[in-house]
Amino acid sequence: MQTIRSKDGTTLAYDVYGSGPALIYITGASCFRSFLPVVQDAKVFAKEFTVYNYDRRGRGNSTDTQPYAIEREVEDIAALIDAAGGKANVYGHSSGAVLALEAALRLGDRVDKVVMYDASYVHDEDEKAQYSQLSQQVHNLLQAGKHAQAMTTFLKGIGMPKAFVYLMRLMPGWKTMVALAPTLAYDIALTRDLPPLERAAHVTVPVQVIVGEKSPAGIHDVAKQLTNVIPGASFIRLAGQDHMASAKALLPLLVRFLKHQPAPVAEATR
Image (cartoon, rainbow, N blue to C red; front, side):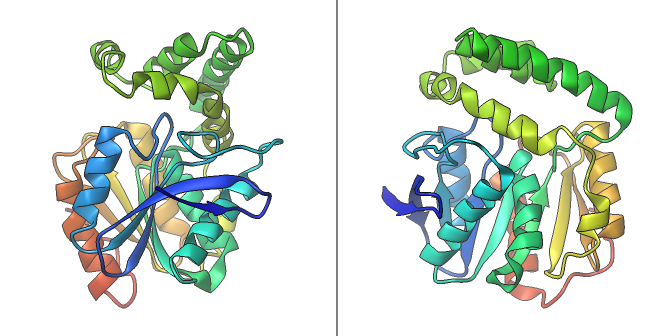
């Protein structure tokens, strides 16, 4: 484990795997850097990249500084980019894809290229209203100190099968997931609004938008909305994959876009 300080003094814990172009790996809600699926993904990506796998603030071995703001998480990414030598590619999954887009908007040429997988903004006003109700339930449980219930309520509320949520409670990382339950409020802050299409139209770095073929329809809609407005963005529907995509299926796409393709191509469907 290595550490670095973000602009506001927050200590970020991270691990580095592999060699090749630098890739900042931004995880989604309920994930942390030593969670087995995250480690497995990072090690697959490390076959082609130098992967910076970090605990987002408030998670795992990273500290936290209040009040929370999306800008602080972007400053965290900037600190990781500094650790990587001042310039890096960024890959974000789910709410991490939202942060990847914010990095593209706010960090300029410090970001080489961005890959967004299943960016989890709400896709329309109806979903926004439903998500607001879920957010309030989670907030109330967190306020009552019921962190395990807050985590399971959130996971079920975003569509994870009940059986899968039950199995997660049996995994070695469950206690750590419960400990980071307060950071669900951060992920909700990132994803509770519609995609920022007007802002996304001003992205100046190459972006690839990927969506799992089996991911929810709303996530497909978000992906298309973003692809339509981000200048030159490419789009891929990843066959056979859902929200928790196989890193082995993703790696060839990352290699092609981040290592070999000089600029985004027109929309492509796989």
